[in-house]
Image (cartoon, rainbow, N blue to C red; front, side, top):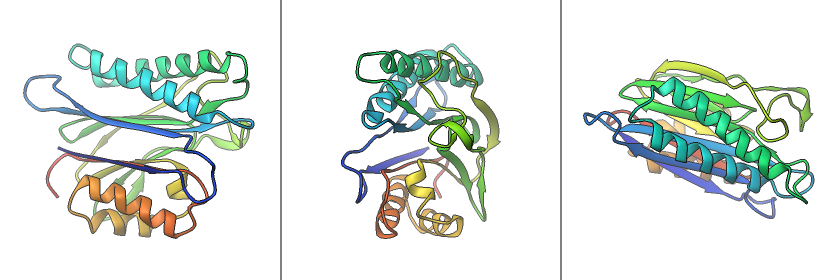
Length: 225
């Protein structure tokens, strides 16, 4: 399994409010399990990185501890619950009113991915085509046009998906998808040799396309491409 990760503050934001993480866990003694998470912090007017960092830290701690004994769907569901709890606790601290974060994660065992999301950070499957696997929680919502994010409320309901990954799995913040269309995303991912170079290529392309927001990409390839 290959994992790759890249992030950049972009050209217009004063700091990076995105947080992400990738790791492999020896969960069954046979093959490593990949764990990826991307969170896009939001705030009024400052401090989104507090929520995104708290969420990703809590989630990854739970996932790495729980995977040897807990099934992937339960790891994702419980991990997102803990991520929301951590972000919510930060949101209640003085000076942090109004912070929150999107969240997307994948636990990849062999070619099987369990994906969870809240907000508009996305998961894609890229092979001969590109397919968006998650649905944005976006409309005239409570938080920046989003109907669901982590942090503002004590509980949140994530969407969960089970997918077979035959190519490349991409998790990203909207700093990627607001700058690059699906065809361009697929081109940059398919034209790279490693997961790390794919993540780097997407961030570079988003910067060259404008880089108006923070940019984050996490990549998983279950087998050599």
